Image 1: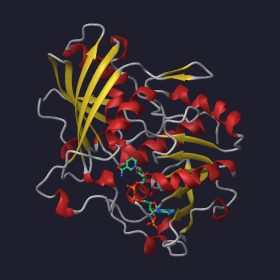
Image 2: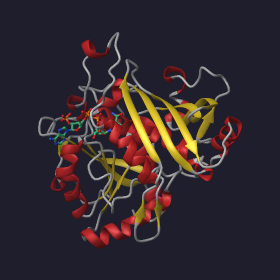
Image 3: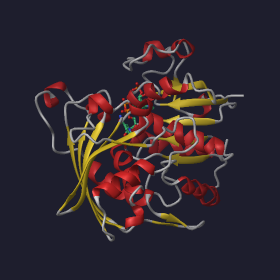
Image 4: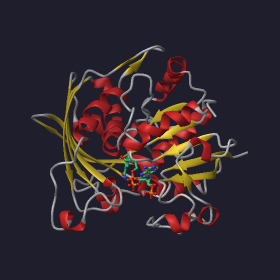
Length: 344
Ligand SMILES: NC(=O)c1ccc[n+]([C@@H]2O[C@H](COP(=O)([O-])OP(=O)(O)OC[C@H]3O[C@@H](n4cnc5c(N)ncnc54)[C@H](OP(=O)(O)O)[C@@H]3O)[C@@H](O)[C@H]2O)c1
């Protein structure tokens, strides 16, 4: 039987992607939709300015959106996918966990807390065991799992494929799509015919979340990876798909051919939304490109290309769909992992 789930922040850019992915999902049934007070009481069709590339699912269009409050969500809902602004998530997500809900969240609040698992299932599924520590410390019947920032998810799987060479220094420069800022995030006057070399708070997320994701969990504590990471983040006028240029210095010698093989062979998982292969490595030096490659693996694959040796170590480019692999798909995948591991 499908697990009854709710979407917090269901009317936003990521919330709409969540609905697009959850509606046909055989393991989940959408049973609750929440948003701000301004949307509460409206049907989903009235409340959401639907902008994703498929029609609003019939089963969702006439559902009533409620306020984002545990009392407004039916008791028989077992899991919540959250795509709230992080300031709102910080206020309300803990209340849902306290009320017994398991929350798979996109919002950045709490991602770096010691007892909150930050998970990419193909990279660090064992970090989910932090939930025992979390329940112990917080006394929650529910639980909270986070997926990383969209630009972190794009490059970390490629690094995970290279860990056996000893990661020492990583430089990453991003070219991020406008959908990453949400519908009201970047005005057209700001971004058309332009590029903005600053995204507030983003560099820190890439630098810290990557070290947590590639850290080691010993059953009680998580030790972050010791590699140095420096990030530079740019907004560009693409709609979806974050492209990143990466330089990696390793302890052991690493050739471009060996890195390409390690990325190609890096295993995916047997979860419904895990793509096969996880990392698609291009031979063509001008790929990956956002418009052409963001939907690889139904938007869940990571694309890499341009691998070459440089004075600053291995150099390559990588790409992922920011609202699918980088957000909604990432939390659905975490939901599948929670289900497989008996947390639901
Ligand atoms: N976009 C991406 O690529 C991406 C990637 C990774 C992570 N994220 C994270 O995902 C979250 C959502 O991003 P987004 O791009 O979907 O934002 P968005 O388009 O602005 O949507 C925000 C959602 O939160 C709701 N909301 C706003 N204020 C609220 C309040 N006071 N109480 C309850 N609900 C409220 C909105 O409802 P109304 O419609 O009623 O205002 C809407 O449903 C953010 O934390 C973001 O950092 C986004």
